[in-house]
Length: 299
Image (cartoon, rainbow, N blue to C red; front, side):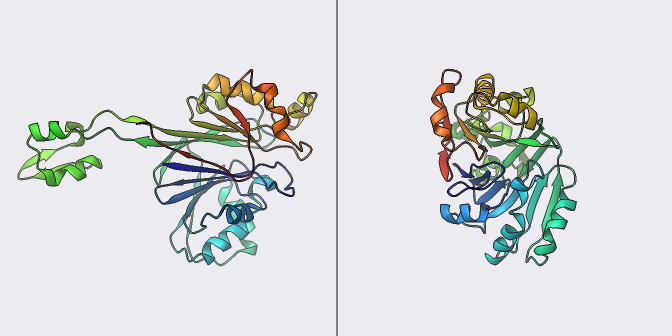
């Protein structure tokens, strides 16, 4: 199972009842945060999820509304008795930006590890693909995959006379040598099954890289800065996206579901504008702070 929580949905400015855009994923004992604007700590506390398991923090870019909450969060993670390393992932300049922010959070009881973008990152069970989008500064989206191995073929293992004490290790991808014989996972494992995929994108004009990387997502979380008509020129000027543009991306990517987020402070009731885009992509919702889903593997 993969737990997904949209911690905050506001762009640029935190509002009463609407914290800045941030996403938290939980899988197999690991928590991964994407973006950390002002108010992220409060949003996590309101949700009731723990700070201690947060071991990966990703950044789309370094505008304040996506990273200014980091120093306080790092201190709170430390106060949760965490001593294991925390990995930070982001565009070029990550260590420089974080070092500057840590002037007000210099002492941490755990190590920070930095990964500046490369095309694919495997960490703590997450398979992460970062893709460049089109904003006023260098900015990336994330496609997060949870792969699922094939089924163990008991009958095949018995037919090949593979000792039962080797089965567990073969299931977990290890080659096993027993009594002079070598057994490999491909001897008893079926083809990989469908996993889970969540794609997250904020602060961008609609570009091909988004629909390509979001292809087939179980959940596509995409910025919808403007829902009202007449905001198209403003979206182009400030390198953001309208609800209509986001809906077209979701349709192109053939995702199962889309949540809109990163709303303009002037967009008081985002849900009022969802019906107008459902003819483009029907399974769309306006995100709300604390909105959560548990994604499960298909049978």
